[in-house]
Image (cartoon, rainbow, N blue to C red; front, side, top):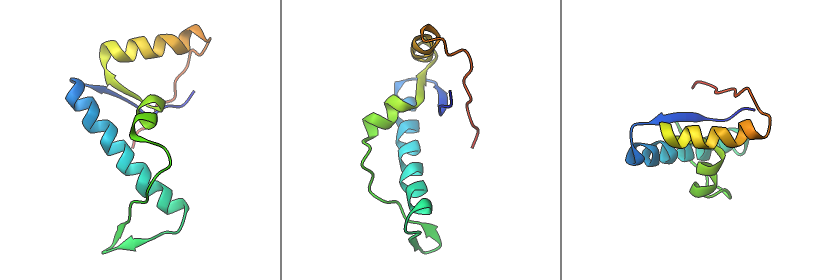
Length: 86
């Protein structure tokens, strides 16, 4: 299984990293789409996926939260997680 993953220091750090990931994907959608650039920067596009949905699809949280969320995958028989660096 491949998921974005980040072990946050606390809840505020986790919220900040989810927001950064959301902004990244708004720009990534543009790279794969219309390729709009403003001032040399890839412009963010609106997303259909909400911030909350992105947070559910990524493993971003404190260590105890990550253990809980990973245990769900373990119960499903998933024993390897690919966590790309970026």
